[in-house]
Image: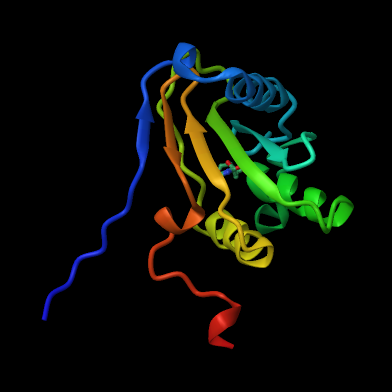
Length: 159
Ligand code: THU
């Protein structure tokens, strides 16, 4: 029997349609992206996370000459967040990535490993994390939970 999984996402066509906190997250992700350490791929990614206490944590991708030792912007950011605020829930995660010198880009979704890591914290905090991924031009895709980006997800409930 064939079955279907439906996921939900929203397309926010321009920066102007974001609310104030979303605009702040967009701006902070875009700014921190400029400090990415990505000399090997030249693909610069910035991430901004809104915590339930109102604080915003930012991060960028960090590469390494031994390629697999590098880390994506999303994981750099959420690992630091969890290390420093282990009991504070994450409300929103905003990511923006594009080649270093690009003036225009498409919205880049989190990679598979980042989705799995975000899921870990969503399951831990028992509250969905809203995920936004944006292009430099201001087109934004949004899901209400990481589960929309990771159907058939594996989490601690199976262990
Ligand atoms: N990258 C991220 O930071 N986040 C993603 O979700 C996708 C990929 C980084 C990893 C690497 O430094 C560069 O982009 C090219 O893959």
